[in-house]
Image (cartoon, rainbow, N blue to C red; front, side, top):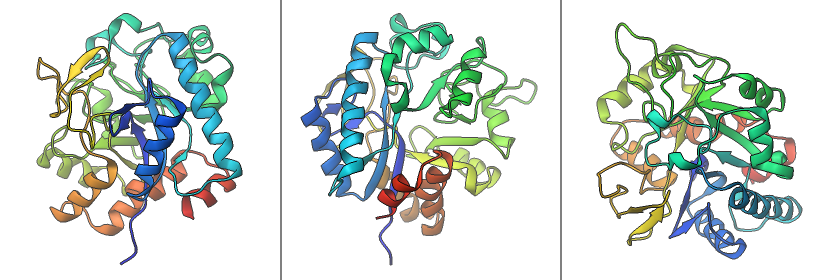
Length: 298
C-alpha cells in the first residue's frame, strides 16, 4: 500500500514550538520532524498578535520558503501562512485574545502584514463585518475563510475554518455559516476530525453531505502536539489535554497524520478518501504553481 501523504492547511505548531513565536531554527526543526510523518506541506497558522510580532514571524516563513524553493530536502514545505487571528468576532473568539482583534478593513490588513503580503495564503475572517477586505483578498488570490464568526452568511468567502467550531450551530429556523457551508457544493470546508472537536455523528453527517472534493481535513494542531507539557498559547496556559483551565478547547493535540490514520482505523473514512481530503483537495484549493506541486508530489 502506498504511503499516505498529507498537507495541513491549519496548524499552530508541534513539539513544543509555537509558530507565533518560534525562531528560524525552531521552525526548521519542526519541519524536519513533520516530514517524517509524510506531512509534505503546511500553512503555518498564526493567531492574533501584535503587528510587530506577526511581521517578525512572516519574515521567517518567507525566508524559509524562498530557501526551500531553491533546495528542499527532508523537511515539510511552507506553502504559505494562514492568518487565523485578528479579524475575528469577539463573540466567537474561542481561546484567542480579543484584545488584539482588529476591524477587518483593507487598511488594517495592509498594516498588519506590511511587506509580507505575498507569503499569506489564507485569512480567516468573520464575514458579518464589512466585506471590502474579503473582496480585496479574493482579488489578490488570498483565500478567505469564514470562521470565529456569528455571521448568518458566508458572503464572498471561499471556505470555512474548522467547520462547526467557533460558529453558530445549525438550527432549523436560523441561517448560519455552518449550514451554508455544509450545503454549498462550491465551498471548501476545513474539518478537525479528531473526534473531540467533532463527534462521530456530526462527522457522519458532514462526510455524507459535503462533496468529497470540497473537504479539507486539518489538524489545528497546537504546539503541545507531541509535547507532554503545559504551554502558553494565546496568553493562556494550555494543558496536555488541549484545553485551558476553563475547559475551553484551544486546538488539537494530534498532527494530521494521526487524525487521518485514526479515521481509517475506526472505519470512518477509507484510504482513498484520505488521499483526496488530506492531500489532493489541498493542492487544488491552494492555487499552487507547478513548482510547488512538484515539491509536494516528490
